[in-house]
Image 1 (cartoon, rainbow, N blue to C red):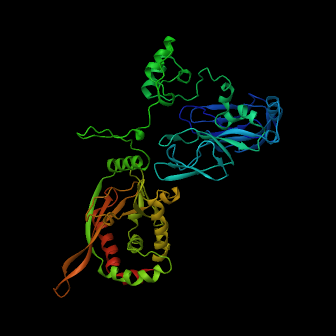
Image 2: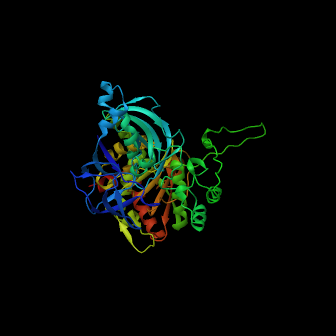
Image 3: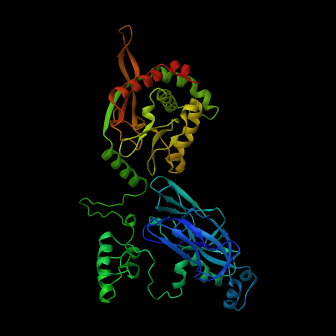
Length: 512
């Protein structure tokens, strides 16, 4: 039976390493504990040993490549799998001969920099039979809602998390009985390899606590352990999911057994209590909301914001849109005002490229972007998301309208792809769609500017002849990064953008 060797934890906090030298090659027969390769972390050179006897069938990395911890390092044909299975099964049936094996499904990378996610909904239950690529659960990262598909056909044996739990990337998500392997009895040997091959050697003694290789503990507990000369991986934690506390370390040094606390119920599962005099409830801030909190705090604490407001007369643009709306609706195009705003902004950015730039951390260098990747803040059911339309300078108003419809619909459901959330260069927040006229938006770092659109109002204004007439007016509010943009620049940019919106004909003439 072929099995992937999963690169185990090779140091606290280490998530990747460089393959320095392969000590084996494809086709080699290897023995348990035989060194297979040298890898370099940011701390040391580490030699990785084999866990089983077998034949190397495939190396997933070349010398010099960067390998991920908890990802497959190489593939091997396990030696003696079928005979071992036959020895355990006294009366093999045809099904047992073809075989099944228990294997943990490892939660894969679901976005750049994402290390954990919340289980929003299980789409399967224990005992269900899965088809390959069948959706098994929805998970919420700090950027979007992601659906996880099954990798193999088989039967769900165990769900490792409950709804609302936080799952770790590169850790087991659920256990599955996979069809077509070398026999169910082999699962006792092969299943641990899907998670951490080095831990498989200790799996045969479940009654004895064995360190996982990476303890869960706070910096203060780690410091205490260092002072006492205690290896935290050998300490049985009494907290939730094995978290090690100070008393656990102290009990370990004294030889006492710490009292293991029952795992607390998820906060979301506890209903609000009410005594009739006014109750309260608590819920954790996580997922997209937690990401927004971190992003906004980072933005306001590192970027000196300034705000610039202006009034735009949209009377003529609204009339033009109404003329075209029904015509394009028949073609399936939802023509809102936003595509006009985005195209007009792209035209203005061509003359003011500094608004389409990003500044480095110490404010010593500006990067100007050729593509106008204009983001639109969407109030989704999972929180604020900011997908962006790539290359608006190359797209027509109708192309932007079509893409915008797809993006906003996906974002409102929380299912926008990570690629659509990356690479934005400037952002529009349409707060006026909900209400409000003036805002002070926070810049979507590392961008340098954001604009909030207020609601459109019918207000009296004097025309060229001094007569009062009703006009459709919108207040817009810019926030700029005052390290690189001054008031005069954003005022001139806004005047150009405003002229395209107030005189749609001038915008059409400027299109290429």
